[in-house]
Length: 128
Image (tube, rainbow, N blue to C red; front, side, top):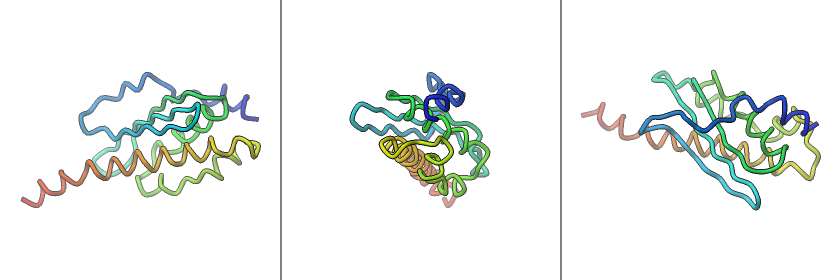
């Protein structure tokens, strides 16, 4: 039940207070929805924290929250294996709300792509 899931899973909702100049951040928009996700990855490539801000329905909030909870403690590569179908199944989303889980998956992938992009300058500095 998406409505029950939204109340149960709003743990990682925040004012997105993770601060770092290199903090991977991604904002995705869809009609009447905003997905904003921040992740913090340690030097070993493990996600140590994640936050989200989602404007939209309960299914959108629940999808973002669950995705955020699932990425914590995973490596970047492990987090990339999270699929929207898994999110939708866990939350029992009806077919009309599947786009919410799709946007949550897209937000994870976009934030992690941003992380990888921000790591490239570090690799270049290490090679010097």
